[in-house]
Image 1: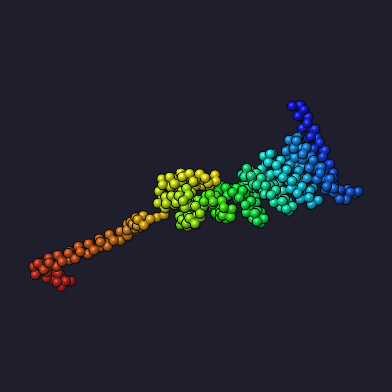
Image 2 (image 1 turned 90 degrees about the horizontal axis):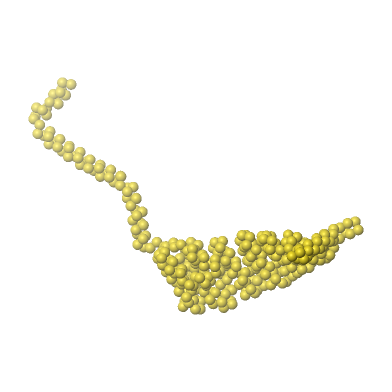
Length: 353
């Protein structure tokens, strides 16, 4: 234990000396007009190694980042990228995932400039994992998509599978359905080109799930299913049967039938976030003709009620007119039966007036 501690302390002290030496290399004076970037790069890189052994992660990260800057100054892009990648690893080990992601992204840029796409893609995927761990899903998605674009530019579609798969997972987790459908379409193209038959079948199943989850678009989902039927082996596969059963259940709006369909093993073969998306489906049943008529009748009822007071008033008005006519008729009959003198009396009164 004591020997180990002494060794760490010795490496820490050595690292500090090397770091200071690196700082001196980049300083200028009256007699030294230009920084010594080569010397600085060497000293900072060695200091980073010493701090790594001493497990001083903050100093380790800073030393390697400084080495990266110095290597860039002398146009040593590959060594600069390596230094930034080592700085990113130190930041990751120090639980500073967001910082690590940015350092890996910087390393990727330099690897690409150097013409080493394999190393660049690995750096991006490491950065994406760090951003994901830090909870910065937008940055993680950006880094994975950058890796996808890079391999597309390099015309190596078979290399897109790994980062594309991770990008799909993140888009599903963030419920970015439009972006998810775009990525799944790209993924389908890759699978078609590389004859990943089973993966292609699952891709179609995933797209059907996303269409239903997004807005319950049964028409678009059925079109996707029809397109899938043109893929070799889909119609007779367990995946095809699961998709067909889900669509049939969804159209009826029967929650129990939808649950039964989703219990099919085919859905468990989807990537974790896509499988979780499938399990979260809530049925949005289309309105059938019978239901539409019932809904129309139900909506007409309040209107009828709203119209009833005027109708009742009209009926009462008609009844009132009938009563008035009857009363007038009775009055006429009664008058005709009155004695002549009584009938003439008003005229006499009128004459007096």
